[in-house]
Every structure is written in C-alpha cells, then in structure tokens.
Amino acid sequence: MARDRGIVNFMTPPQLPDVVEPARLTAALRRGGVLDAGAVREVKVLHQRDTVVSHIIRLGLRYVGESGGAPQSLILKTANAAFAQKLANGGRREVAYYTQPAPKMPLGLVPRCFHADFDEESLAWHLLLEDLTDSHEVATQWPLPPSREQASAIVTTLARWHAAWWDHPDLGDTVGSWATPEDSAQRMETFAGHYDRFADLLGDRLSEERRILYRRLIDQSERLSQRHHSRRHLSITHGDAHIWNFLLPRPGVAETVRIFDFDLWSINVPTHDLAYMMAMQWYPERRQALERLLLNLYHETLTESGITGYTRGALDRDYRWSVLWHITRPVWMWSINIPPLIWWNNLERVMMAVEDLGCEELLG
Image (tube, rainbow, N blue to C red; front, top):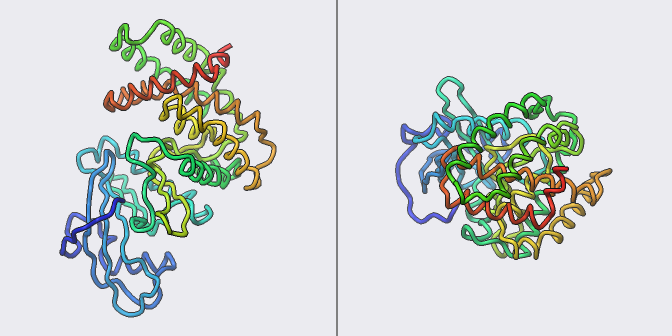
C-alpha cells in the first residue's frame, strides 16, 4: 500500500473481477454503509503490484450524484497468477477471515472489507478492501526493527485483536476450526520428514546440540501440544505477525494501527504471534531491550480489554512455549522454497531466543 504516482486511464479491464464494475461497486459500497444516494461512475487502476501470494491493485473511483464521505479509492486483492493454483489455500483462508470473524470485530483493528469471494471451482478469489495508503504506512523498511514507540503501538493493537476473540464461544463453530490431537500428530509426522531432509542438507551447519533439540521436540510434541488442545486461553492468531503486516498511522493522522494479510490465520495460543514477531524476527540486543516491556504492555492491554483469569506468569509460560515451537518454522519455510535469506536468519534468531529464555527446560 505504498504511495502511488501515476494513473493508468482505462475502464474496468477484462482481467479484473466483475465486482469492480461500477454497478457492482455501488452495491458493495452501499452494503458497507459508505455510499448513500450517489453511484460509482468510473473506475481507474492507479497502481498495481505483485506479492508472493497475491496481486494488489489500487482503484480510483469517480461518482455521480451525492457521494460525500464515500471512498475515493479502494484496494483490490486477487490471486497472483503465477501461484494461483499452488497457493490457492492462502486466498481461501483470507476470504474466510473477512467473511467469518472480521465482521464481528471492533472497527479500527483491520482494514474494512466491502466484498470477499472465493470460487472453489476456478480457485479465483478477491477482496475489496479499504484503502489506507494515504493515512497509514509500514513501520520500517525490511528488515529494520521498529522503534520502541512503533513496537508498543503494534503490540497494543495485536492484544486488542486477540482479546476480541479470546475464548469466544464461536471459535471452532462458526469461526475457524479446532485442530485435533490426530491433526497435530499428522502435522508433526510431516514435519519430521521435512526436518530429516533439512538436516541432511545443512550437514555440519546444523550443530549436534541443535539436532538433539529438534529430536527432543519431535519426541515430546504430543505432550507439548496439550496446551493447544486444552481449548483454554486461545484466540484467533495471525500466523505471520511480523511488523510489516501492520500499518501505522502517518504522522499527524488521528488513526489506529491496522493489521493485514490474513492468509495464515487460525485458532491458536495467542503468544505464537508475539514469539513470531520478536523471537523469530529480532536479533538478541533488540529483542532483549523490548521483550519484557512489550509482554507487560500486551498483558495490561488484555486486562483493559476485559480478559480475566490469564496471569502474567501464564503469559510468560505461553511465550516461552511458543518460542520453542517456532524452531519448526524455518524448516517449514525451507520446505516450501522460501529463500535462505529468510529462513536461515530466522533459524539463527529463534535459536538464540530459545537459549536466552531457557526454553529447552520445557522439554523435561
């Protein structure tokens, strides 16, 4: 959602979904409560770019009739054509997020969605989202860590987002699905196969100490998974909660931090998102400088949001548990051909966090 300069002057090109036709857009915006008597007259593509999973298009809108307060632009997110079949499940999950939990959440946590659709036959999907380009920006250029102020704003919003679905009765019913012990066992069996190939590839670049740690985690996985299967103090988790999936208000803009990109959301222990953000992404000096402060802030925000019965000690235990589990993440990344620039650095950082926090104690 970076700032855009040029305007491509063409009307609703054939490669775009029907939802961007003026009449369909008018209907979607009216359902969303942002357009009253007026109607969309013209749609222009202002900018477009690819990500690994998706194609992002910024649309400019012109209206006829009364359109005060109606959005002047929208974001259309569709499948990246090069990976549409291989990564279709990411689109399926993100559409599910915007159609299941998002409509029931407090405003100001995620971009508003005016239309979402996934076609099971063609695997085509799209999202029509609020455009936050002019009001928001990412905290830093990857891979720079955030400032203390930025990190605090991000963690506060993450805590409020988790709190909105904390132990909610709809979890596993109309929102998401529970992972069963059988699911966890199957996933760990798959992981073990990936790990064996990963370890063979790395050779002596994966120390004997780390090999033992992985083997102990695999052996203890059934016991460790009981925390998740307790179905207590769980919520919706993002699954990819690095700081570049948060949009911060631009200077001078009275707005809130927004979370985006929900193709990996699930029901899980909420500290998984915190561990991914800090232990996986930050080198020790930065993590150690901010980790306790941010965990305290997270717990305070949960309490202010009405979450009870979850102590500060429980948060620490869950955080260490999540950090330990995240040693599996670089292996999963390697297994789907994410480049070593990402997974190798993640591996080194999370292993240092495991050592710093004494996570190996959790293996008994």
